[in-house]
Image (cartoon, rainbow, N blue to C red; front, side):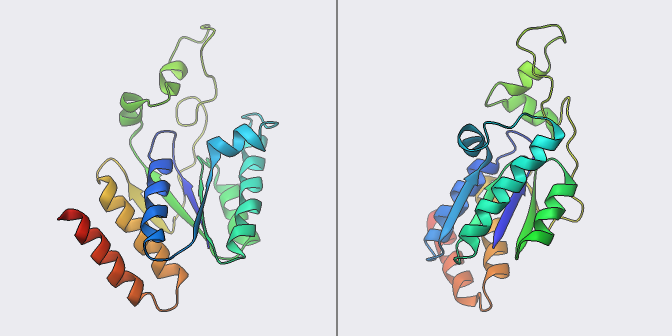
Length: 193
């Protein structure tokens, strides 16, 4: 199974995927995370931030994910993935691809600005540090059409979001998820004590 998390920078994709991996490991479910930032720095550093290169980036991540997935490993791609066309392309190219929209209002992301990207994107056009292609500010983000799962990281806390995504993966990956749901519920309840 391939889970493609799509959302703006700072929406919580990396945090959520890391927490879900821990949750699933507790259930004995092998999970691999393909983090868009990490892979861009290593195997996709030849790509720019043009639309064509952003789409190629997702194609490469999808190919790598397919190799893990073919071995029964739940593979989570954590990337902005701004274009519907390439998201749908992955769904038709590989088996069991699920699109998950990780949503947070842009204004909240500007306030958080964990990487300082929004501040740079909002600089005057002639400023030397200006980012001219930040998705959601001065570059397009196409909201996923009919995603398989919608997760709002602004309205829900991390624990709730982890439970949503973990349950979704269990429901869609296993034919008899009952035993995993019982353990999943026990794990979540035990952390509240």
